[in-house]
Length: 157
Image 1: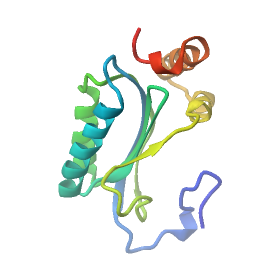
Image 2 (image 1 turned 90 degrees about the horizontal axis):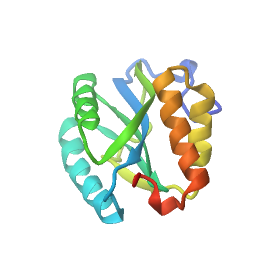
Image 3 (image 1 turned 30 degrees about the vertical axis):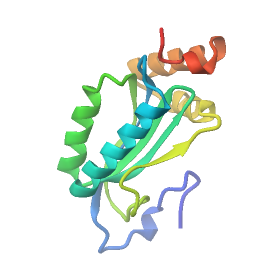
Image 4 (image 1 turned 180 degrees about the horizontal axis):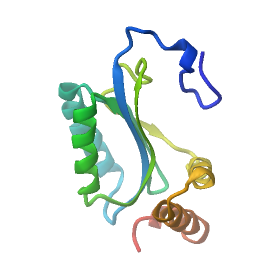
């Protein structure tokens, strides 16, 4: 049984389930990041993630990345460190970081891309629950840009 957000409920955890580290974030694409660059990023992530037991999903739309990453704690934490140093994005907002005993939500996705017709709803939900000042500021900047600029210019100021 899943909760209202599609996450497994505590009562449904299989005692044999692995302990998984989860990192969920959104960020703003840097100048020059286009569909071709996102495609290259996905191909590289699939090769790397398969070898390190990491699965997840990447949503890219309107110049915004939203990513769910799950896997062994040490491997996901190394990936998090590399994400923070990646010049292809900025205004990184951590939406969740946790470690739980549960089944994978994306068991066969080394990293799949999902298109976002409207990423605004995801960002507004994140802003509603954000507590850290830098996350609130980054989400506010991203949403303001969506309100005032053509979507294809996101990441270019």
